[in-house]
Image (tube, rainbow, N blue to C red):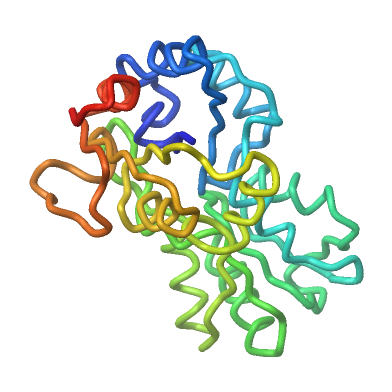
Length: 250
């Protein structure tokens, strides 16, 4: 199981050796799946981005925090979405009704998006204070890009959490909703390969899988040691895969 941002790519730009490493695993007989907390892209966007990065994939090989968040809805929910196209797509695939933030929603669902303003954040907090359920795709504080770290979904969630006085139900890694989705679809992964101990490492622990930490994203060598302790620590996914296939640390 691969995380995407900081593992396969940085803002869509492939990290050297990652596409070849994925292909090496497949040729060795392993099934490869991609599990991400980034709820912004649609599944078609992800497939296209993976193709541009040199990785063939189909939608069934992707599990996202947006999909996990959607599993927390019921058919009679009225949901206001503060998030990107991927979150809208996931909610649209349920029987829940999507409504504007000012239309008395019963659920406010928040994911990473750069298209928001103070008025939307204020309306979201007001609806939650008024009794709406608060669901977050994830609480990742940062998002890795080639230019450095940008604010993640957790930055928006934190604003609304403080303004509303309410804690969200969190769907993405390392929480139960996405873990349940992964196990139901794919079973327990042989390895979780990721760049964040707080999300990927904790998710591996929840799943009962060994964790391979790569230092190409949010975690750098100066941050070591980390908790949970990884089974493998590598500079990048290519070296992590070599270690997995070779049965040695990188």
